[in-house]
Image 1 (cartoon, rainbow, N blue to C red):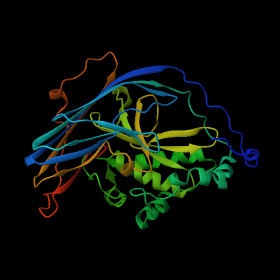
Image 2: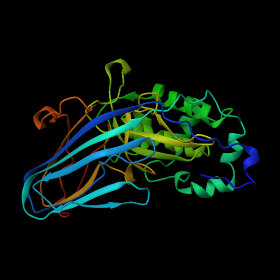
Image 3: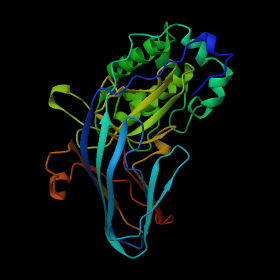
Length: 340
């Protein structure tokens, strides 16, 4: 963003550094919904195609469904690619397979800190107007009494500059919460994780976003994948989608922070969609029509481009989620997958 001249004396906007090197990944994301009895129809939106941006290029993407369907595509207002389809006939299983090849570039390390005048930039009306959507509370990233209690307990406040504040907040979330797969649900409010002090990446990101926006820093949710290496000791699930957040910082632009793994987002983070929170960018969102129990199996494999592509049986089952028994008075049942 280019600031008007009346704001430039507060802080000098510098050109972003050029990437150092590039890496290539292949991604295979398999999603399978199984129903206890045949259902009459499925409708689904899918956000799995990696974004095309300055530091990331989606070189190849292919999406298929079984039963076969006509897949349509649109781009939303944040330039996320959304595929959608409808399966009108009876079926007892729906399988969605997404395959991608991605090129990612890395940047030099961030500075240790920004000048304190960066706060002056963030407090200007121009910044507030430009990033209003990413400053206001959203569906899942909404402050409440428990969040304010956590904020006071941890002594969370503005530090000398916004970058130092983000680095400290990332560390606080990482240390305050235990990572435990399936400890929350896809629609869990942040109060669930705040109560038990455990959750998954989706929970940690929502809590962090709510805190960051409360400090006056524009912040957005990022849905995607993380390439795991043994030497990194990531605590998030290797065979699942991932989520982190980006904060807009003067002179740096959007910077990614991964509170689940206490990381700055790097070339290992592959971005598929951005939004105000998970509600804007779930990997799958859909409904089915029928009276049936459903079970979700998800398998994800991110590997260097030269690695062999796994077969379906190598990917599933990895994560299993069964929603509550359907309400027979409401035949349209929601079906989504949580980000681990």
